[in-house]
Length: 129
Length: 309
Image (cartoon, rainbow over all chains, first blue to last red):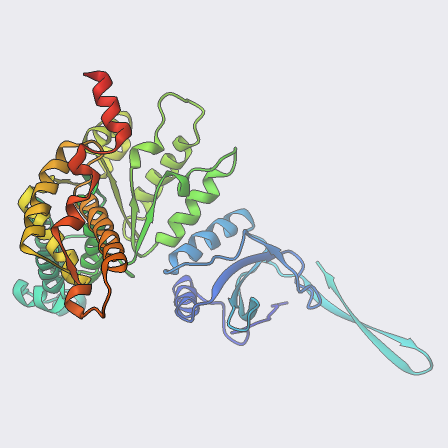
């Protein structure tokens, strides 16, 4: 199942050239970029592993692309996303986030309905590989 | 014939390229703002011409890939290496050889870590910041410490060399330092020598040039010298040159800063009435003559030379 989240989730996967252009846009806004990866794309899993610190003071997208390349080399079968942090509110707020790498065969997300308290229903999602 | 080949231009007007790229403005700025340094300016002009021609050749499909642009600037302290590096970054940007054209100026401390595993992230971080611009490594020979074989500098050098080779179209590295020590550095790191195409030497300024530089600096700060002060400055320059730790334009800048200090002090303690703009912006001979240079330099230095004599 193709898992989507963040920006551009309705688009096909971005090419490296398109990723570079997006990163250029972020840097132009003065945002810092962080690379994160995970093997657990569950929608409740918001905290992915950080691939190093977010990159501040960059001027050119190449710096991000180098890190992304390294991360892809280390975790080719993981999900990788780029987060852009905006500090204009006084904290580093994520303003943009998009997936840049996904495994060849993606896990399924399945939904379980559980009846509780009479006829009420609880929904849980689980990842099935 | 493919469509692409048909679409490629068959002639290139170098003059028009030169004008439209904005390289001319940078070169003129260089001429105007930097006094002396004739060999440096000539080399930069040559480099600019080469890059323009290379660009034209690429447009006609005669050349592929980026030429090696890494440089080394050698010269004594205060001869304008950093200033020229800044202009070089602007020039390379205008000619389209670096994307952003900013200058990241670092020394050994910014590249080399303090413990195992600290160096690589530090160096990579600097390199990432320099992507799309120019990385200026001042006193680059400190990276290599032959007396300590476990020195982390070697690790930084290896990463640098790798990036200089693989990311040639992403950044330009400029190594700077004193001529003789740079020579040693290149001899012990042949990898650097072969990756650096342009060696530019910065000559010392003549006394006359230093005097003009001083005039330039004062003009920028809205100060002027009296006739006697001009003479005092001329004497100062020739005396200062003979003393240790002479750093060309930097020494002059420091001397002028101290002269301003003395002028302020003089005005403050001596003036009784209101001061006009002329009084506030005039440096007199006594402001300059009060310098320790006229008594033979710093006391500690003087004692040392006496002991030696």
